[in-house]
Image 1 (cartoon, helix red, strand yellow):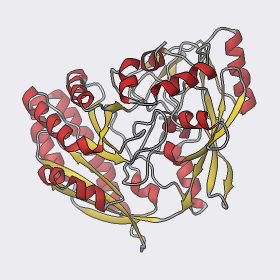
Image 2 (cartoon, helix red, strand yellow):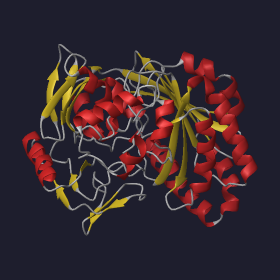
Image 3 (cartoon, helix red, strand yellow):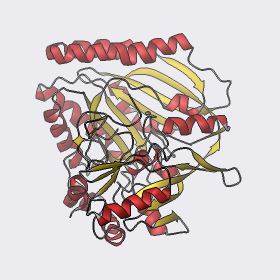
Image 4 (cartoon, helix red, strand yellow):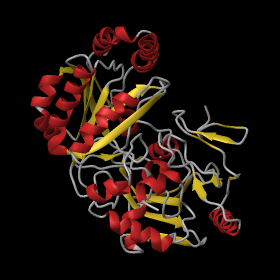
Length: 439
């Protein structure tokens, strides 16, 4: 599949198959000037504008019936500043390309999510994150960004220049303008030691605070219908480098994590009654392993099984209680859930609409394989998450609106006031933004 979600007969579709849109026209600008001209022209024609990345959002955040901006020519590294330890990269650059290019230069981001298909601006605009005790989302590592606003002017933002725009636009939901370049903080490439091992859910929950405190990056997957989890701890290491042997990696990451898992999903969809048994087998399929490698080879993993996902950030101190409620709900409901629940953390940050804005957070993600009915499960899960003042990932399935967000984001009004200033005519509006930010 190409890096951008598919388009046939002028229809744009996202990666998860949950959204389709028919834009009036598509533009693939090769420069910031061409992009600014396309936005001005859209204004003259009375058309809305949306930039898309790789289509990895499950929401309709990038959908438009106006002008669809494709980013594939706005890619590559503009500048590496070794004194400031920053890299400036064009907005359409896929994370995969950024990670490999940085590694060649002996550099790395501090933290990242586990998927590398997204573009840098798509990932940061929706708040994509990994897991970390002190290190936050990808957007939290931004030092400056360049933004083309509704009237076609180009704004440079940082803590010193247009700081109020910088505070919001790092996770701007595509509502403030089109991001054309991002400057990230980087550091000399380092080694991470990963320790993956099964652990009973009871133990993970009773020891969660220690597991979080003792590891730079801790996450776990819980297999519903079982008391089993698979935990992952990543910590910096002095070396030596000890990557996963190629054959073993192929077997575990491709065959077990993707191949067998895909078959298990098919069987589960055809015969839901078998899911608890499959879950017990799946939870035991991956054995413990440790390996040491450069960051992107440890943080990221291939994801070939298509799925639909909902993820909420809850206050970190509420994570155990929230998970116990989720587990009780699944047991009570008669639901058959074949996909593990993923749990990660992030420290508080200062980005206006980041899911970790102003509070230490834990992320709980629920998934269903693409094509399976997910509504009943996600609705029940969302009910639990929102009771804990959860904040949904902007790019994943949720039903929240502006009224709810005004309650769970103390700086919500700050964002909407800035949007009124930068996009008074709602050039970048679509149905999703109307719902989550208000008209």
